[in-house]
Length: 338
Ligand SMILES: [Zn+2]
Image 1 (cartoon, rainbow, N blue to C red):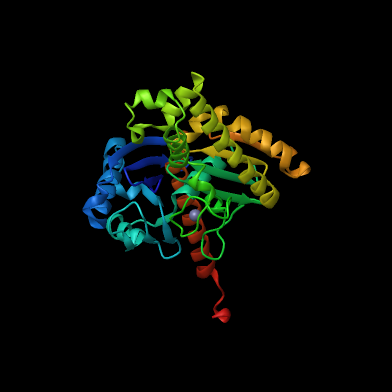
Image 2: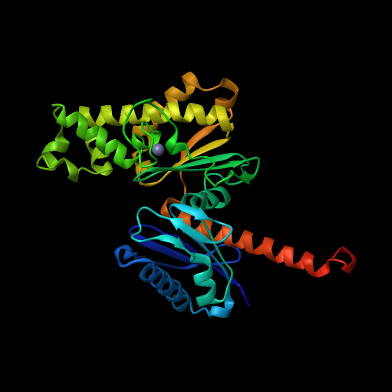
């Protein structure tokens, strides 16, 4: 009984879910469209169907599931299991995700930020395995980050510790959703890179990217920028160089602050690899504290987009074990303490 764990990743476009054994071997995986425009109840129902489909695919009964972890984007009240706000999900405010699933599946359900779930995955089974000081960056639409220091995942007073994407790089710069401007994530992310590319082309610099999209510059993707880079396109080369440089200065601060053993670069844009990171490494070498930079390697993520569901399963398993331990202690509490 209770031999399996469900790990789920709620994104603005897709829901991903995996069914894992207690040794974190994946026995089934499933995906569905989020249908976020239909509102929270429809999204939750869609997530529930995805979870039930997993059990059906693996031939596992509901009673055999021990717990479930869900990575949710945006602001959370992690302890209460409430998703407070998520900018990419329509009408999504104060959604009691954990309680809703506990009522429908009768198992303990735990939520955390989607980037931290990726961090748990990469830390336990990916590039950060056996390390005690890990920083994970996810370069996707924005720049997400999570930090492990001395073997503990950092949360901070409001769960915002390690928000590297909002590190201020320019006193005045591109406006950010957080209300500030000049934040690192406005430049070092897929959207940031594409904006840099567009600014260069609109400024009159010739590029194959303009031809490939018949001058509809909104059609340019991060993958196309990498392809243009490989053809020696100057706009693509300069844009990736500048983005890598800014990432480098961001990481100088990260290395000096957190003294990590490893910085893992994940997310869709990590596919640019050394096209981006070569300049990053040069900046780190030149500017980070010497002892700290020698102790730190910068690598791309191992687990790809499977890190989130695996991490959610690890997170849930840890949280459920802690809960069990606690109730065990309470049960054995001598009566004179009461
Ligand atoms: Zn910001």
